[in-house]
Amino acid sequence: MSAYHALTEQEAIEIASGIEGFFPAGATLNCREIGDGNLNLVFHITDAASGKSLIMKQALPYAKVVGESWPLSLDRARIESESLILQNKLAPGLVPVVYKYDPELALTIMEDLSDHLIMRQGLINGIRYPKFAEDISTFMANTLFFTSDLGMNQQDKKERVKEFINPDLCKITEDLIFDDPYTVSANNNFEPAIEDAAAALREDKALHLEVALLREKFLTNAQALLHGDLHTGSVFATPESTKVIDPEFAYYGPMGFDIGAVIANLLLNYAGQGHWIADEKELADFRSYLLETIRDTWNKFEQKFRALWNEHGVDRIANETPGYQDLYLNRLLQDAVGYAGCKVVRRIVGLAHVADIDTIPDAAARERAQRLALAIGTSLIKLNRNAVSIEQAIDIVLTAE
Ligand code: ADP
Ligand code: MG
Ligand code: MG
Ligand code: MG
Image (cartoon, rainbow, N blue to C red):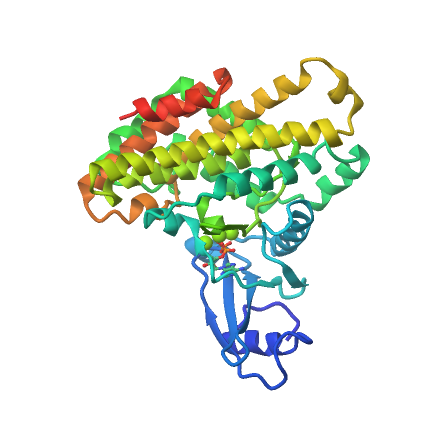
């Protein structure tokens, strides 16, 4: 069974039974493929008698969403499992434990987090996550700082950059986030009702310049090992616990890309809530909570990143040059704001959307959410190089309509 092929549920059970010491001998295992993504199979394997369970994620050699016409390297399964293992060292307890990685089958066997809920769904349901800002800021500060030239041996870092070369997955980002939304592309996917707004994206030259600069950084700036796909669908959460999954897009890129992903997905929920919460007061409260989470996430990230730098910084010049740390953090904020904007825009007009907005059943309410998101996204992109405070981004949201 070792040569690569897409596993059946029965084969997944056989592999799970073979993991020494995990399930009791002779256990009757149950298996269900629960993947909801476009690129992978996810098997949930359980033993009712012992209550033990695990997850097996297998990479497919193509993107399901566009059929076998879009081939994708299986090496991303290695990148995902190696990222999870490294993230668990740098930010303990904030990712699932990897039990085993099988390179032949492009298979990662990991901790089952089914007692958590995918945060995107939780937010749609109106659940608040009081630990999220604390946890995600720790996750980002630790993983980004300690994989950068500020926090690790710079020769070792160059070796690590090589281990995380991820061209197929980077190309998805480069096309779907930085290119398609601003041009006529078969990959785009938006409703006729917002054709005018999509046309405005295609015609806005000032916007194109900002997106071109953000894209250039994504292409060239090997600043830190990113998660690369840090949206609320990659977060399993309960009010007490946060676990980050799905780092198959990991590569060395600009830190602001991860921070921006978190901000963008909170904002997409903000836009969608106009439908999900009918009561005006409750809506205003929940939206304030989302903005407070964005504010906290940035502020805690900045504070933790500076503390790590002051305590563990390895780069003498970075440590000793007056003004450098402040400028560095300001550039991170600017990048985060810019990438947040790009990520909001692509979820409205690009190929892959988000349930926060797409599952709104009422067409007029959906259109309102889409227009609000686009207004916020484009304003953030235009702010990016001038941003000096997270409050400016929050003001954009408060005044957008
Ligand atoms: P993809 O890369 O295809 O998006 P994900 O890693 O995001 O795959 O997983 C897809 C879905 O599978 C998740 O939304 C979740 O429902 C389920 N899943 C993935 N990993 C786990 C896990 N460790 N524990 C429980 N469920 C998981
Ligand atoms: Mg998914
Ligand atoms: Mg994925
Ligand atoms: Mg996913």
